[in-house]
Length: 448
Image (cartoon, rainbow, N blue to C red):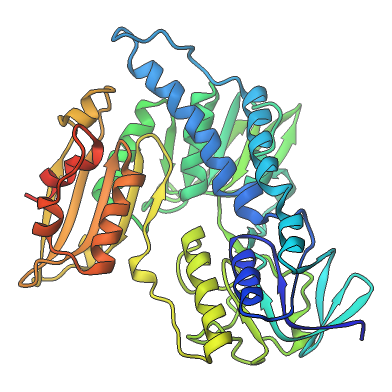
């Protein structure tokens, strides 16, 4: 045995970093390791680079929307220089991370980490023991069992493309496909989304998703439902996709330059050898109890996308890290409430949601739907699609759900997050004094 720690954290993303700092601050001897560069999925291949690209796409889209209304912007993104800009920002955030851990007194390790036994890890060629082992390894693209699956471009690879192909198909109708499709379309690519089911972005409000589909199609994105990817072949430099049309029950061929994997992600526990540590796996992820502790090895806790309770979102990972740290320090007393976490799809316009959905509402709730397409906040930059759906609990008048599409929806949803988490009523939120003119001022009209 080389070394002993109070806590050893596997993974340097949002959850792992938060855990390491919290436990070190509490006086524990802490180490952290990563098989890749320090920073985690969110920093390198998740929300941070994605939002940089979508931010640039928003500028192009705004310029195009405002043509003839004061704007003479360039039509498309300059992809190579945008990727260079993205890398510059990402590495400015991630390069200092290891030194920051070291400065805080946290030992750092690099390389593959796997379980040796219940309390011991193999880190490279060293054996390291810890009272607590904390797994925060994130997620990776799901393995797709079809012929030619090797031709799929993962979301990680898409974010590092130096050149963007002309014709791109996104397989799957979730976050990844929609967000990347909106970026690629503003870069001038011919873009299609195919989805085997009928329900796109299934965790969001149906009416608002339909608006987003309309906005996507008007941006030149073709969206096809009821079609399942069954195989990929490469012929004469093109990719040929074999697709099963579920409605007609016949196979058809699509051709493209690139097909992007938006068919789901799974916990990135490959190579961790959890069986050596007596760590049970459930549905492909670390099986944990309500305290985020392994159900089979009490020395192990997990947080982030490597477990399956709760949506795979950066705020979820942060919440889970806080819960794990609190349970290690206080004993198992704390649990995570996933019902009050906001989520957003960074398309153009943005779709955002928190809390109770209309399909789950009862006669104990009332729903306020507002078409905001004629509001000043939408008209000032010629945005066509904007609406809100707010769900109120009758009697208490507390806001219990909020669903938005339109300009700055990702920021406005945070007002509703605060309201739901603190139990504010519709009147309290409506009667607050907001800066004017601003998108957040619109909450007054959403709650009438």
